[in-house]
Image 1 (cartoon, rainbow, N blue to C red):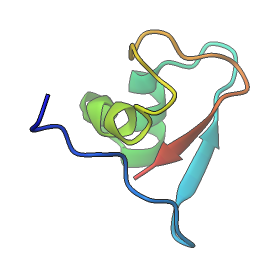
Image 2: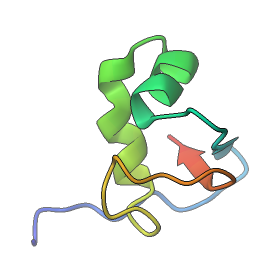
Image 3: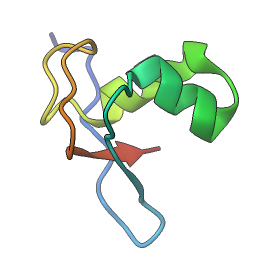
Image 4: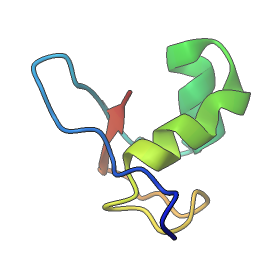
Length: 65
């Protein structure tokens, strides 16, 4: 799709989160942003390694925009 923006480039301000057992993108967004409904932002920033927001793996390192 032409309207999709690419994931942000890594820079010195890029934050990372390592997925732990029991994590979901909602739980990660709730932890880092205080609002689980912002999980699509994390998904968009990691589309190079995620094809489905419900399929994250323990040990994956996700960009936190």
